[in-house]
Structures are given as structure tokens and as C-alpha cells.
Image (spheres, rainbow, N blue to C red):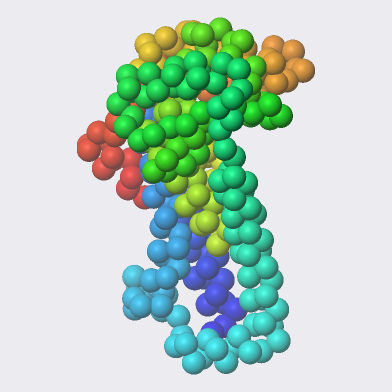
Length: 289
């Protein structure tokens, strides 16, 4: 195995795939966020598939790697050991950081004795019934963190700060609906898959752009999901703007550079598709690289 073979198989080929995915992402800006998110996920999954097929598929479809014996010989050289050690260090660090985050979330338990917990859990249960989410969703109130988040696959959890009981009930329901959108779409599981692939290809800077776009499209898809369920697009956009102003000391005129501005702008774009379902025809058109 030569350094050129490694570069072609594990660097150049993934860069080409990501580049084509980026072009497709830009060309499909009028498609729904759900469609664009799924297409980006396909691009992400193609990276390890393309790398692995080099071991089993002959050229010209892909570049066939040398036999394991030749590979093992090269890895025993000084250059091979240095490259392998550097790469594995990055992979293990990314996997360790991801595992640490999963373990931290797994130990979070609901404190059912907190004031208003029963009322907020009942409100969450009612929203689950209205949106046909049948898996158990448990509320976690935090007295320390102000983060609003959701996680879990078979058994999901939604975290709110304890101050959530004092929020306007209509705004609180919109926030809960957004988190339920992540649960309904299984975004937490897809996020883990994306982060694992990012850890495998951490050497490629564009992989972090791809991961960022996946997260952004996930948020936009859940925004569309909230709008479809509630039908309150202007109220929801106002809520996002209010949340952004609370988290930032920037004047309103500078919010264009901040995180929620693109989501607010996307909600108000009438020409764009906001459907939360992926149509078969649209899927075929938008997923061809």
C-alpha cells in the first residue's frame, strides 16, 4: 500500500462525495428541510461505504486496495505506524467524547418531586397523544442547566429548565412540540450516526461542515413539523426571535449572523417546501449525486 493509494481511497474519494453532496444541497434549497436532511445523511453514510468497498470491489468502479498482507507490511513501517497512530488517536478521541456525552445523558433522571413537575409531564403526555407519538417520553426538569434538549430512541426524554413552569403556556407548548419533532424523526439516533462517521473521517475539514448542515436541517425540519402540527408559523417565528434575543447581547439588526436567524428566515419563505414528508419523486430528484 502506498501513501497515494491511501490518499485516493480515504481522502480524495470522500472529498469528491462531500463536494457533490454540497452542490446537490445548494441546488435543492427549495426542497423541504426533511428532504435535504435525508440527502445529507445519505452523503454521510456513503463515506464509509465508499471506503470499505475498496477492499472488495475491483476497479474501475472503485480503487482496489492491496491485500491484507501487503497492508500489514506497510503498517509496520515507521511512516505507516505514525500515520495509523495519529489517525486512531483522532478516532478514539471523537468516540470517547461521544460516549461521554451519551453516558452523561443516561444518568439524568426526572425529579418528580419538583414543583409543577406533574403538570408539565401531563402537558407533555397530552402533546404526545395529539401528535401520535406512542413511545414513552419523560420530562426532566433541571435546576442548574437552561438547555432545552431531547434524547433517546426507544425511551425518550425532554429536558426543560425549572423556570419552564413560569413560561407562557402557548410558547411552552411550541417549544415542547419542537423537541417532540426531534423524537418523532429519530434525530438523536441519526445524530449519533453522523458523529460516528465524522469521527472516522475527522481528518477531512469538510466533514465538519457536513455535520453542521445535518444539524441545521434537522432543526429546520422540526420547525416545519411544529408549523404543520400547530399551524402557528408567525407565532413560532416570533418565539425563535425572542429566544435568540434572550441568548444574545447583539442588537436585533445583527441577529442575521446568529444561529436562529436562518431558521426564522426559512419559516417565512413562502416559495420553499415545508412539507415534513418526503415525496418519492422529490426523493429521486434530490438524492442523485
